[in-house]
Image (tube, rainbow, N blue to C red; front, top):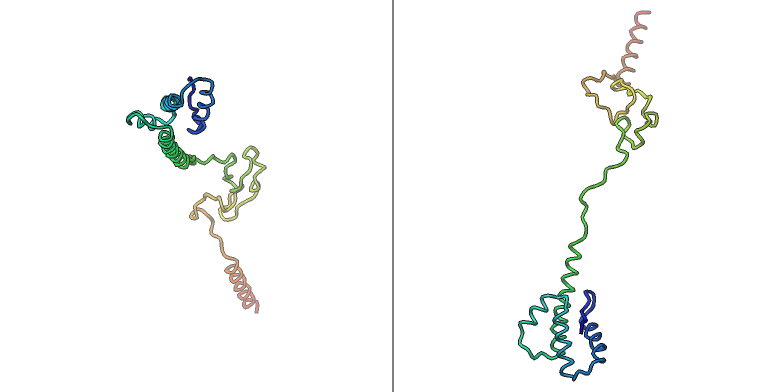
Length: 169
């Protein structure tokens, strides 16, 4: 026989396939079992089963050989399952955004046209510079002009008005 067990074929299916092919031959029942066992050992994709079986004493029956092979087949299946769990792909990097945040407004838009930026043409009152907003302002607070709070300005104006009234009276 020039049959080989396929990588995805279970042991029982391979034995059934061998039995069907052997019907064309005129083997005695004992010779049939011996030939199928030889074929199993020669063509199994499970190398540990092959090595272990070759080290055993001769005289295994077909049932013993199949039970032994099924044990290795089940172990091989569990190993592949465990390996596939550990083989889940991991994220190696995060793709860069094709439009990074704008340095003038902090939003995402095309950098090709300056007019696309909503901050273009505006003046940031804290630093006094044009074309950017507070969330992306790079001016240090030391360079920024001193800004008075509106409450302080209203108190100053109120006191100035009172002084003017006193002077006029």
